[in-house]
Length: 394
Image (cartoon, rainbow, N blue to C red; front, side):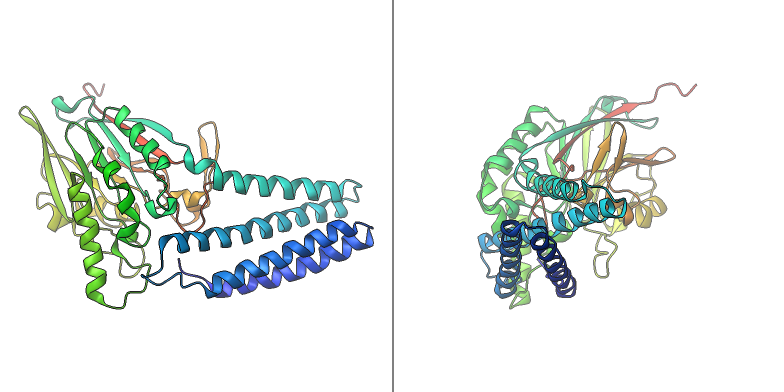
């Protein structure tokens, strides 16, 4: 977890300004106990930021429990800051409209915001939403009509700090779907391999007719902690690859696999993370599979959806790409068939199915968390993609 100190300083100043104003308004209104309560929350906010400041969160030697504790401390700070800010905004609007209910409205908005944030931290991460999608292709081999792909992504196992119940539930959901193949599209961990060790048996209990295939995500390259030695960093990455192999997974690091049904076949191509930041363009399609324009039906596993437009569409005729990475920024609003997430401000394809002509991309919003330990509206997702053959275009 990288601390953006400038942002925290700005927020600290904002907190001071808000708290001074709130306390003065409460005291002038005769609500002295509420003023003292607000002052207590201000002291707690300062203490949380100070505690995080002295914690060695970026060191590879830091225990995962310490790292998770730091995440929750920062999140608690935000659950104090954001409700206050939203409550003040509601209060200000009410005052501008000269309504008597301005203060009550501000309190209600603040309470709802706080409740929503803690629901997203405590309840939503333990839920699982299965999204079922059908995709039709005219070049799909006959034997693969009805083929069921289960996609799992962005587990970030360190988030759960060794608590296996949530991951056990996700694995059970996946196995109960009776998949033909399971595809994991990266970010098994957040910082280092140790996070995955309590879940080795669970990862090995996944079952699919044609096996489990995976690729690495940006967090799987050990770049989010400080290592004393480059060799230690490379050894940890190898340990993560070995852990997946021991669980029976087939890790496709710029490699491919053939899945056959009788005389028909499809190609699974796995590329290393190809992201939109400097140093993240590792994936090499040509190295992974030389026949990028052949007649085989091809599915690509790639962590970052950025690669679809930046690489896959222009350099291949791959039919379907599966990606993750965005998490929907762990905040999503969904009404009927309409969905919105702030992730859309950065990623044109941030969650769900997209297509260009007859070529498709599916972005899974993941199950784990990174940065802030919450998911508001963005329920952990397991995707079932059923392939269908188009038999008549008329």
